[in-house]
Image (cartoon, rainbow, N blue to C red; front, side, top):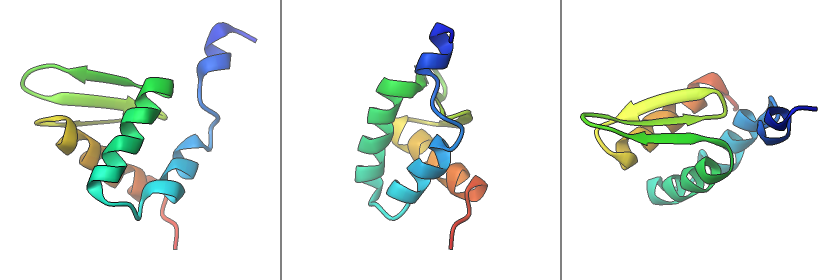
Length: 82
């Protein structure tokens, strides 16, 4: 097992994250995304956009909150649960 294998999230991590946080308020989602970023992702605060890379999914926005909202919307589209 390589170092990268030990830090990479499992393949179903995106779906598990969506199930847990999709019904939360935007503020709570942002806090959850921040926590997941510290453990598994990458955030790039560059001008003119803010980029979030988490669980193999990338999204951008004008600021952290918009990037997080865009990331969650994209994650929900990839993991449609009813």
